[in-house]
Image (cartoon, rainbow, N blue to C red; front, side, top):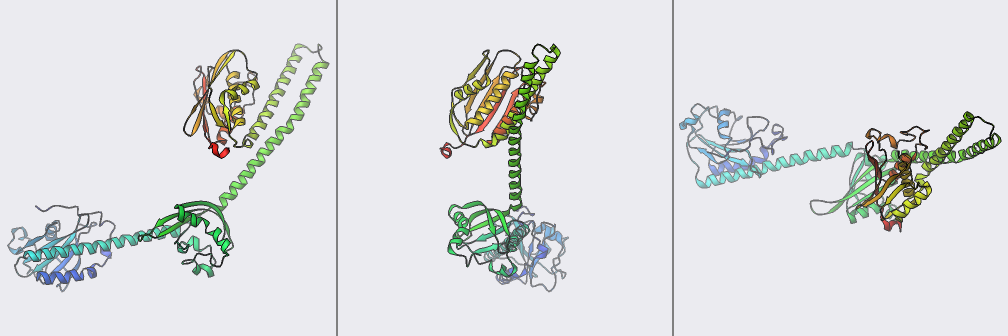
Length: 515
């Protein structure tokens, strides 16, 4: 039994046999087939994966079309070994089959398989004669050799067709891409450029792009600057840069340009460049930065200027209290206490707004700090109740001091302020990880229901009544803003009645860069 192979091979998929004239590439094979096998008829049929019927792609010795009953073809084309029949008219397997020729005079029939490099059956080289005969061993060997030759030539045609299709796809991608795409050789001459690149030049200059460096005529100093990133890409393999480029068309664009070295088939170095126009993005970023700066300055100025009238109001309240001492009833005195309390809240709000606006002015300067010493300093600022116990891990960290103090002060203050008992325990720990510090502030207070875990970080959000617990509602917002500024994260682990744990992941900064 002959070996069976996958007829609908991947080698043939997406290769349109109907549209390709293969006869010229098989001419030499066909001539040699007739001579070596001493037969009058020969043809090559190729398996068509889109159709159950094979296609005749070359013929010799026939006056017209090769028309034959495909039931014979089905019997033969699944054979991947040499096959010959001395006289098909005496073979019972073909008794009910018509001949490939209308004259119905064919007796001898032989076929050699066309096998791909991967071992797939591609088709057959078929010979016929009007006389009954058999090929000798030499003829059989030669026919198989010619079939291999035909298979190789057919595969070359397929590969070239696939290559042409790939080139068409790449050309389409390149031409429809809004990014500028180009390739340069070792002499910095442009060997390829897409339309987005070429259209940046005036029409009269476009024929001076391919084959040129486009800096011909520049001064040597200017040329060196222009080609700096090309040199880096050739030397290091890649370069990335955001650059402003003035094009001959008169346009100045901000480009994010990536250049990557690659080798051609013959081993020569080239660079592929892709430039993305980020001009509008840069404008928007610039406007956003200015807007943020203006907002920060406004918040700083407004909160600073509000201090003076608040001081004046507090002074007035004190004077009135002195003037009316012993003259006001209990209700009026309570009203004064509420006024003072709310003025105090207003002062804290102004001070917190001022702190909030200054977070991004803290800078990135890194200090060598003792976590224990930093926590001690924070507790002095808080006027720490004696009933509370603070346990701090003795560890050295390299972090910016002012933001760290601000964050710890807020979290410690919250732990004390929201505690439902007059005494409690707070643990401050730090785990040094390869790329970050993980700080944890854990208390044994009332805890926070998970449904409020996101809400507490929003500005001016407080879970308790303003008159129950003093505060502006900005503390945790400031903490989160500061952590985000340093590309860190903060999260909470807590359940109602089971205490609260804030976990901060603070990325490390290279100490050498800050020394």
